[in-house]
Every structure is written in structure tokens, then in C-alpha cells.
Length: 295
Image (tube, rainbow, N blue to C red; front, side, top):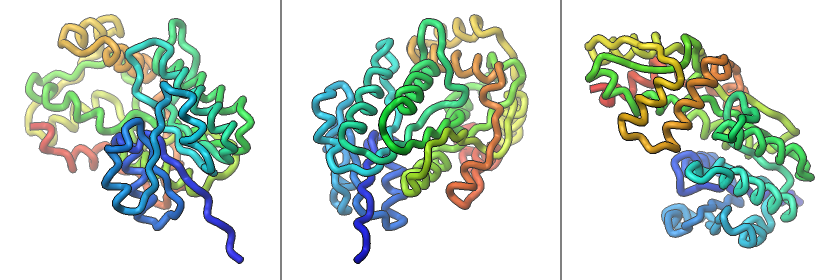
């Protein structure tokens, strides 16, 4: 008599990462799959494909018991609630407590490189305290996946950099092991399927790339000169704010550059290939595939 396959739940399934994880699990024929979102109506197409859908609202802790009932393995995709200090860590703690109470056997959490406490809080601080909450819980197994910076972030300012001929950063010449969202999703799906041990894994691209190298790639692919200009963090903050970016986004981008300058983003691992059997895409190949964003 065969054992019943574990029930897997993916939070944030209405977002880009969570949805892609669900799709990858479907492609591999993973049974007993549950897609969860604050707004399940966004998951109607997944429901039509036979995926169970549930409402998960981390701002409503009382609702989480029903959301996680009967779940064996849970992918907790970190939320994007960055506008109110303390909200995101409260959401994550509520989810972890509910998962523990529901008897979840393995929790996978999407963290960030160099997770550590920060004076005054911040995006990296949230990840650190979430990791601490996971490790301190009574959940039998867990996998913390520290996603490096998405390669997709290189597309956000690419057009402006090419148009102006200038790329600005406060990374102090340090490299970043950019990793595509697709490679992160593949790794997340694999970790959820495996559900093994208690481990913290850095999820990276194949090499750490400096902003000088990014500027050179922009120039090569666009046919226009692009130069990287190194700035102190406070000057970058002023420039981003002056460009009209929301304060919460400015804080995240500056925090990321400061972390990169400290070497936190230069960690290169084989985690993607080890878990998925396929090497991650390089920055050069990623930008080549998205050349249209540079013009």
C-alpha cells in the first residue's frame, strides 16, 4: 500500500515568484498541491487546472489555522509589506506560529543574503528575525533559501542608464551574484518537493558581477556608451528620492547597495544546480535574452 503524497502549500501564489513555483510543481506532476493568496480570485486559472486554492491573509492571524490545516510542507514567500515598519516581521511570525500549530512538517522560507539585525529595522532585519523565528519554532524541518538579488532588477533601470549613459550605485566596487527569478522558483520548488533537514542555503547566480561589468554589458548590448559612477550611500539615497521613487523602495535599494558593498551579495554557490540539476543563467545571458529592455 503506497503512502499518501505530502500536501504542499505555496503562499503568495498570486505573485510572480509564488505563481511560478506552483506552475513548476504542476509541470512535474506534483500531487496534493495548494496555492494560497490573500485574494484567491487571482488563482482561478490554477483552480481550473485542479489546484486547491485557499485564502491566506497574514494580517489576519486567526484565519491562518484554517489556511494551513492538513498541510505537510509550506513555502512561505516573504511578503512585500515594506511600507509600515514592523508589519512584515509580524506577518511572518504569525505564519510561522500558525504553521507550527497546524503540524506542518517542513517550512521553506525565501530570505535574502547576509540576513542580519539592522539598527532601526529594515528589509534585511526582517529576514534575520524571520530566520530566527523559523529556527526557534517546533517545526521539525526547515529550509531557508537566501535568494541573491534578482537579475530582473537589472532591467528596472537599464533603459534610463542607456539613455543617460550613466549607471549609479553605492556598491563600492563589490560584486553581486545576481540570480534570475526563474532560477529561484526552480530552487524553491525543488526544496519544497524534497522537504529535507534544517538548513540555510545561499541561492546565487554563477558569478559575482560588479556594476562596472553591468555597465559594460549595457553598453555592449545597446551599442551605446554606459559608465558606472560610484556614489556614497547618502548620495544614492538623495538621487533616488529626487527621481520620485517611493521612500520604502529607496530604503530597500540603498540597503541592498550597502549590503553589496560589505560583500554580502558576492557569495557564489552551486545550490541552484545541486537542488534542480540545472545551472543558473548568467547575467550576460539574462541580459541578452532581455535586450529589448535596454533600448
